[in-house]
Image 1 (cartoon, rainbow, N blue to C red):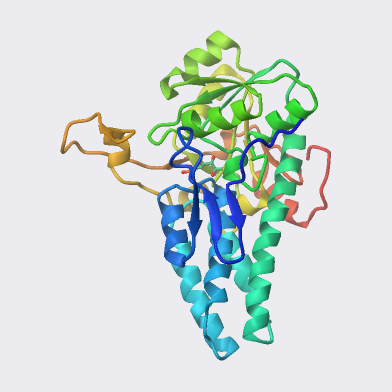
Image 2 (image 1 turned 180 degrees about the horizontal axis):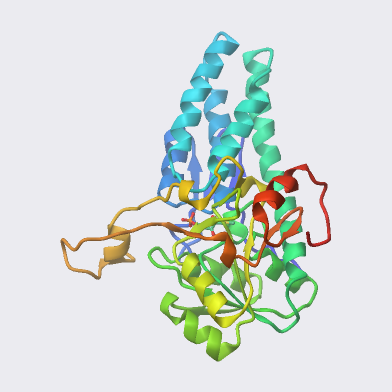
Length: 355
Ligand SMILES: CSC[C@@H](O)[C@@H](O)C(=O)COP(=O)(O)O
């Protein structure tokens, strides 16, 4: 089956970057060309491209593209300009660690370049490598995650941790694409994910494109749906996983983890190693992005709340590690004891057994 009727979220075009405009989905499949660092910053900050791995890939291409135009005469001059641009792009969104992970991977790759031209080439190659690797990583996450589900099960998810949030396949949605490829029936219950509706607009759309059975609910229907529809598990993506396993993901994830505990069903986080930030020790250290009040007071551009109302609009929440049944990575499935097990993953070859 060709699962990937689903368009790619990001494409490198040598002179520019083309992204799928995720703000416009599902009503329009629109592509935008990004030519400058400011274009890339704006695309990330305004959620035209979103999802932790896709943000990282776009930023990497953005930095490589900007650097390709530097007129620097010395490698030293090149690197000081690169650092400025790296810092600018890194500030586009604070929570998803894949953004700084990708930018830092690029700057590290170019560090020892002997000439300005060599540094420019290295940056482009490294950005391409990040995208290629992410596709493979997501597929491996999907294989591991699929081993946790039985045919016919109903699984709940929030936000969009799907193909368009990554290079391909997604993280939390990857097992559903692989199940489809293997002829295994799984049903997905997708929360709409207020305020900006990544679940309704993106997850429902991309799963339907691939022929995966998906049912859309509003966020406040989760408990009733788990009970009435016999949901067997919840699986979500991540924007940053601290060393102790505390996980930042789309606002509403923490509530789902509490529901999972209350109903006695597993709560899984699916994410690549690039989302695990060992420098962040616990969830308390994860910066939580707060976005514009208009996202809450308006729905699809239409005001739904009184002018002047106070608004709190955190884009993410942190699920404490004790509520997470397992973290599914490309190197295998980790259950509990995250403080020791997550650092160990970085040293390990890919494994197929649960640790
Ligand atoms: C594979 S994407 C993982 C996460 O980035 C995803 O679950 C999420 O929370 C995205 O938030 P968004 O604000 O849409 O970028």
